[in-house]
Image 1: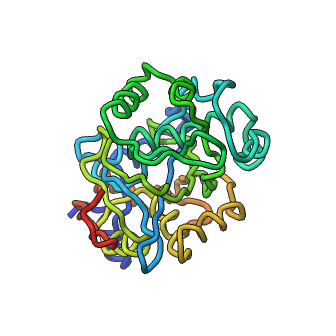
Image 2 (image 1 turned 120 degrees about the vertical axis):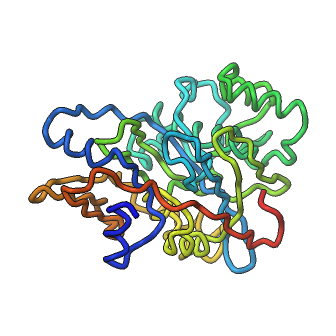
Length: 319
């Protein structure tokens, strides 16, 4: 057993926290001034919800184990901002760009780009489209060869999201989103993202599917069940994922989650690493459960347990 996992188990805290083996060396290099942090790219991710009797279920995907970053970890649909996501001619409904700018802590162009990325990535990776012909309607079935051709063109960046909406005669429904949290990848990580997390209810008539090339499976699971799998060390997740799941677990319905979103704190969460007598202390402000103590003798840490597949609480096959 690797030292990092042994230390966690000795302290009674063995779980599914994703922890890459190169972090200790990179943290020491950052402290020594030999590592220059890369600038984080803006990104957005969406926690799609639907009611499942016992509470809301959230749509999650498992990253392929072959992925260099967080392989095997459970996450939500999402990705980086496309430079064209701030096209001003995009069809838009819901709160104004100025309202979103204030909520997200960016300028208006940045707010549109982030909201647009959230909607676009959800369609690209889950096949769910938060848009409609009018500001008070939403599309239904998005399956079919013509829809798939447009989705593939978006993925390949042959088509901008503004062009896609214009071609379809649709407007983006920003009112279907609720801003939930903001996390920034630690300074010592080679791949860094400034990520806004959103919640949204699955539109009536639409269904999720695994449309992502980065995922090998998807599932609908209650936040409580997913968190329990993480706590047992059965499901691998990054700190932002399990933190947002714990917040969702307090909501009784998808509507309740959306209603509570405006009151959520959007202060960015950025991990801190410090050296204390040769030991690395890694922490996330406001989230004590993720604090790690890495002894100076550790040269590697586990990437995590082999993740299992949570059962589908809705009684159907995973979407």
